[in-house]
Length: 246
Image (cartoon, rainbow, N blue to C red; front, top):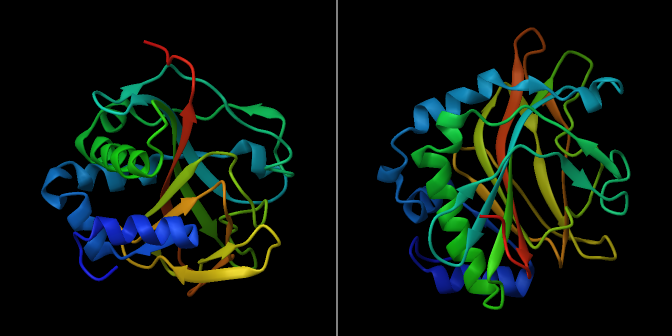
């Protein structure tokens, strides 16, 4: 992508390669950074995530909150009532075929300017790649991956995978005292197509989930005596053929 506003080039990149890495500088332009007027509170909310109890039994340290939204091609993006997150075992061999309930994203943030600007961008961007999609089911995940002395943090404990949706945005919120956390993109035969590391807030990965697999390498603390974490927002879009809830 040669210019921050060269959306056709970014569309072509995703169509041709199945993924795109977007730098924080470009992403801020695409999101109209001035519209993110609650960003400080939004980013700070990652300090108030609940432990992912579904992973705790296996010694993995992840915190998260979750919310779902519904959208049409135009108009309001509507937050939906609380519901579980579900993936089939064919997409998540570690935690598939179970309904996982997580604490919701806090209402002030779920209805706030930053998240809705991100969702508006995704709806318009992904919608331009899928003109036949009339409706979208949207899932949003706040993730904090923690690394400790002798215990690497695993952003994708299920390994290289697909999410079982149409499109994915991974947006870096913060990283503190960690090394690695490299995103890798893979073809269906699992050979690597590319890799990059989200290092600055608003660095982003855009992924065509129907075409490619993705994973993230483990993160390790630079100083094992200090807290270490990787904070991301993951947004998934799945086209819906029937009517959406009101």
